[in-house]
Image 1 (tube, one colour):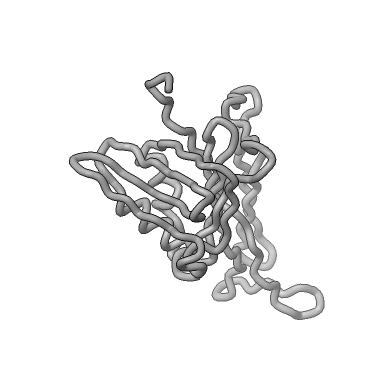
Image 2 (cartoon, rainbow, N blue to C red):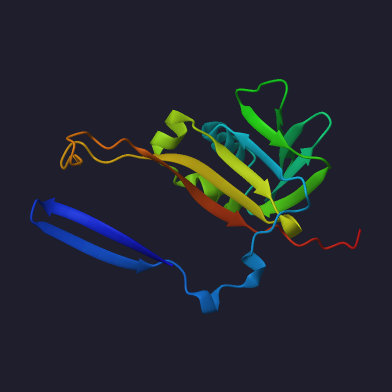
Length: 189
């Protein structure tokens, strides 16, 4: 429940900063991510392609509908405004773009554009350049979890970290996660 940052200015000086990342009493149970059934509803795509798709379907003040369909296996992003724009990621057409797909039923939810955009807006350029991948999972109630795979490397320019055997530590892999609630449906259908 905390983030501890350590800055090493020289071999004998360290600065520590502690940031509380979450206060348990204020977390709403609405944000508890649970799978939507026994088969996970998820897909993995290239990070740059996800960012471009979300940027392209923008309509000011609108929402984006994300649809997963099992046959043919595909993901559809659709934005509406003064018209509409639709982008399809077909699983078997381009496996380099859509690298994994798990869906056993048709699923469709709408998400506010500004919240989806926030999941990709400040991705480090290294994430989109390396194009490692982003995984999107739809949970119970349409909750969307967006995970970006990032490489966390130690800086070699100013303070190389060398372990006791004299070897440089390799970079580590980590996920940056975002959660986006779907828009509430206004109709009873």
